[in-house]
Length: 246
Length: 246
DNA sequence: TTCCATTTTTGATCTGGATCAAGTCTTCTC
DNA sequence: GAGAAGACTTGATCCAGATCAAAAATGGAA
Image (cartoon, rainbow over all chains, first blue to last red; front, side, top):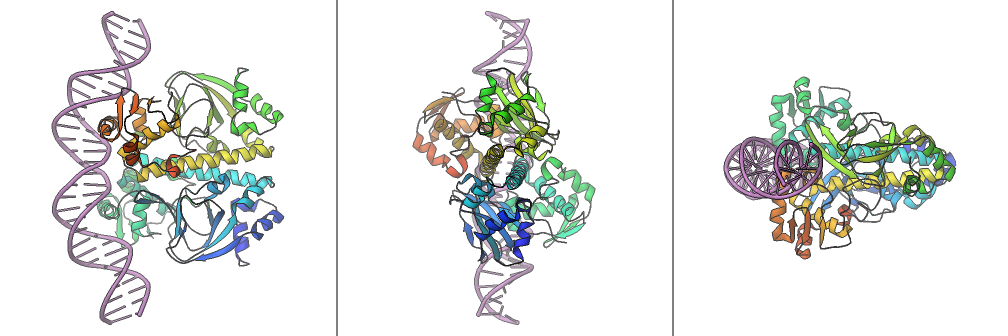
């Protein structure tokens, strides 16, 4: 593990409150690994031997059933993923693959489980982290159940703008193909939907989103704190899609 | 609070490991409340002042957006609900209403939060509970994203049979209208789907489910441990729909 | 029991999205 | 900078599921 990575990890909510000694003990049994692009490093159903921390690159969490698959989240540095499986010592429910070359820290889940029985501050941090992750997935399920695909696209575009500080224009942080899968629709349907959204206040220019009429977009997306956050992306828990650059 | 209720609550995974003194302290600040049928006792967006424990009756957790609403889960005795909101001291993401006359124990969430900072066994229990709830919702999101409504119905019916011990026949534990909402479809569509499932090994007789050809039903439902459990309903966390009687 | 309200079913129709099939545009590689 | 692979778009068609409307069945309450 590189020296500059330790403080980055230490800085995560999950680890910042534990004692230095305990943190070091946890890191001592961990190690870093580099993965090439497109590698499936976790297959759903595998035993959860390691808590993963992305320190470089990005990772897609996705689920498979039968022949189908769907994107559940994208994780970017610096954040952890699949904490719940590690804690339950249960099989991963999701698969993970790198979207680009990525560097991951692997923390043995047995050490993790031992640690929150020893360090009360750490266990409080785990509680907060899990509660936060739970709420993220609930928000996600709400969107899937209550909004149609047009509304999901609109609220996604609006949310990204807000996360970037309310900017009127920004670049999509992921490929459209992936975004479509995350939003639970086909790439074709997303493409068409984006076109028709021009009447509703957003225009696309390649991967660039240009909000031309925020009021109109708002009317369609009907953003709701209890679905769209804040705190949907505010934590470092690795749920949801990353914030847009710029 | 009635004397027979305390041991029932104490028996929950969440509370069984804490010290007796701490449990009593928690219960001392709690109180019971009876609600008539159909009462919305929690509105999404309200501050999470109390952890709820159903000791009698049943409760529907549902979400609203715009004019639409969808059932997220049904909670039956004895189990807790909306733990995550209490821990984060954040607004409820879901609403709750009684499906029948219900008796609920209300535990002040501030006491709860104070407690897991004091009782390490309790905080471990909270961690396990939250991790388990998290995984339930992820399974839920997977079903919504990866299965169509026919497959969701089939796997639901099969799962219920399994939970009841692999029986070939059982009664639906909830109204079809509610089941439809839980499965993310209209009542009409559920009704029609149930009819067409007769070719796939299940027959309905009112609220009674009769599995006539388990192999065929299995082929359609393609049950998957990473979606359908075990442990989807195994905990007392209040996620999912209750197990079928008989 | 009778009446009223709700749930469930059935039918007809409509539509949001999926699917299939080309094409065009990017991006990376050699 | 040519070629190939993948991403994105566009068009045509199809189908799962929603919607609207109205019967039929259930289940309470008086």
